[in-house]
Image (cartoon, rainbow over all chains, first blue to last red; front, side, top):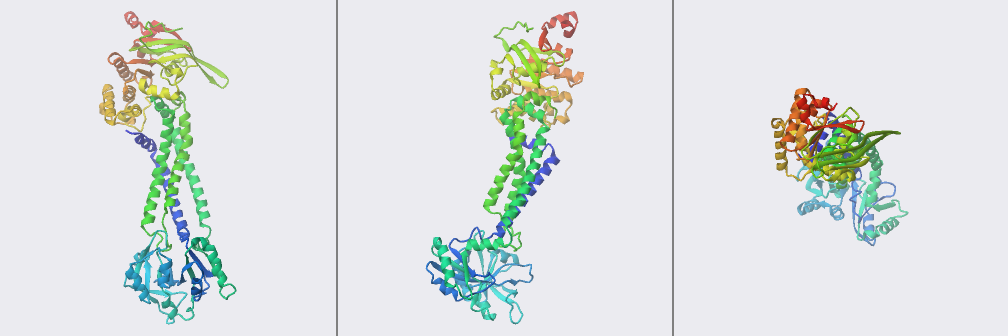
Length: 383
Length: 253
């Protein structure tokens, strides 16, 4: 027999109560993991935004197009290394539920500013050479069982073809990206769009500007916006991080909502687990007296009760945390609705900290009571 | 009054010297033990008798280092218990004292064997050594075949035998039993007393037993009576009562 076995047997003496408490802790940590994953999804791009990238868009809103002619002017600005244009396509594949992002870009420029995109040399060359070619992220390819060589029809919602038919894209490459980077999008040549859709030639949606010195980002952004001041299409340039944050904020303050819900959940959980521990100790005061009679020190009885509390929270919460980390990081639970949906490392660490805190907080008072209990008083008590 | 046992100081395992114990309950002062002096030699089997509230259990608690005297000294196995810290007392108890409780006080979630093993968790013995000792202790009390039974699966007498096995498993210097037959029928009580007697006579264990039962006290080598916190009489002349045919209780009275 070990001390751990003793903890386990004490914990399982009231099986129904322990199971219910374990269930509460389990559910709370499932909720915790799911909310953190959602928060990560909504703020995707904020945390991994490149420090050396700026986003230039129309001063009014992202929906307003900006002239493609700006591209060359922007590249003249001192400190600008490369400029890529991008435009939201907003098409539907078979069913509106099958959502995923599509962008019309200049392939070479786009790949230059986004080194996070991992694409084979063959695929890169094929994409540049093929006007209807498109690359797609691995999760989206897996989702629809697409492979290189497939012809994918996508119905335009913003950009409808004159004949009313679908746009057809040739999948020429499937890319991967580092964790946290949106790897669900389908990206295709802007030429395919501009040649077939009257009126869009000469415009793009926004620019991604790669700067050579991130410390000069603010000055470069000001300089770019100054270039187009008082023009019909004034620009607003911000860091990619600020851009992503602004995008996330359109969904509401997810961070505050998440924190609010989790605070309530964990406070309730603390009461549940604390009550279980308090009841558990209250029911066996005389047993604690017996242990002390046998030679267990006050510190050892304190350790036994705290250990039991830790075992309770680690079993319930640890299982939930491990399960969610595995499921969220192994499967696409978002069904393509979110560019990223995973439990980040900092979330797992925060969960571990919460587990330890809950174990301590739920067991601290009963453990202290067990510590202070005198043998004579304990043996007099029944239970 | 003091215990006038003839044991010399060098033979004494327990020396209680002018001990008083006072509890306070609110403004009320309760004198439980009053200038009690007692000596218990090694190998003795002492029965402590007296009415409820006479201080028997309090004296037993003091001998076991579960409580401290208000004044006077308690020295057991060369350890002055009144001067030791809680931690020192806990360690000392685990090494020197085996307790037998009236209501057995086994942990219901552990089997008989694991209940017996409990005190050994505090030692540095290997798992194999602990198992060996548990087996020996259960053999001594005749319950080897019940090692894997939980307390709820045992009779009261069997539970108490497991309690005794737990008390002897660490080979303590002193066994303290608080009304060990108080919750048992006569037959089971006799079995327990047989066992305690055997531990004393065959294994040389020093035992101090609190009891209300004169028949249980007769099994001891000698009996001390407490009344209102004072030792009022002693009967260490087992032969006398047996010769006259009186019970020890009657002889003392």
